[in-house]
Amino acid sequence: MEIIGTLVIGLIAGFVAKLLLPGKDPGGCIITMLLGVAGAFVATYLGIFLGIYKPGDTAGFIGAVIGSVIILLIYRIFLKKK
Image (cartoon, rainbow, N blue to C red; front, side, top):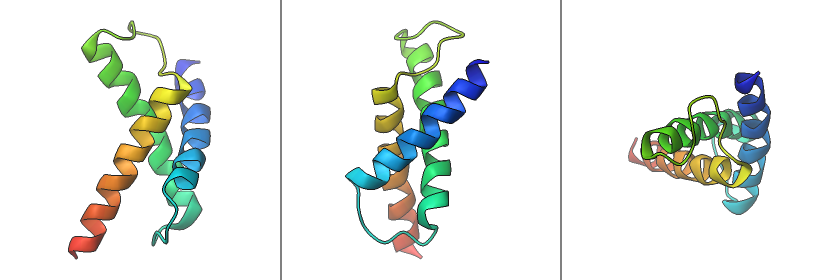
């Protein structure tokens, strides 16, 4: 059930990250939302590693948005280098 919760939070966090970082992305809204899911998973496992969350906890919404913004910025940096 934690994975489904992380997926839902990640989709919403990806949408919010797109609102916080407007601009033209080659992947569009769908890719940004998938990056949000990745950001939620990164925030969850980074939080467990740092001791913020216990195993089995999912990242909070703010953590997922921060993870999504970081992954979106990295995504944009790598696309501009090509």
